Length: 103
Image 1 (tube, rainbow, N blue to C red):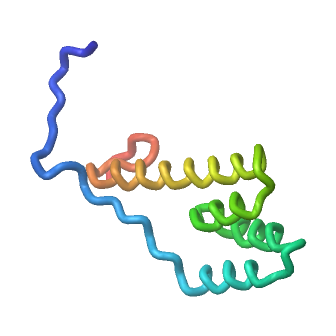
Image 2: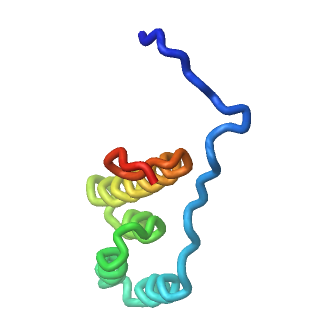
């Protein structure tokens, strides 16, 4: 255990807001979801391949996957994309970007 003090702010950490989905991305997902069921998952995968940080897209891939490892992988990637975003925004609130670079 470290004997270094932990300094906490009375106001807490900076607020992190997940960005809103653009209208264009919403239309692309809606179009993919409107495709026939036998190609729907592939259509959503194509949207997510172009927008890999699209969290709702990863969740939708998981929803459209067979139960088991395929669904788990999609949900897990979405989870890590989201937690990575939150962590980077949290650090940016302290003036730090990836690789310890101060902004």
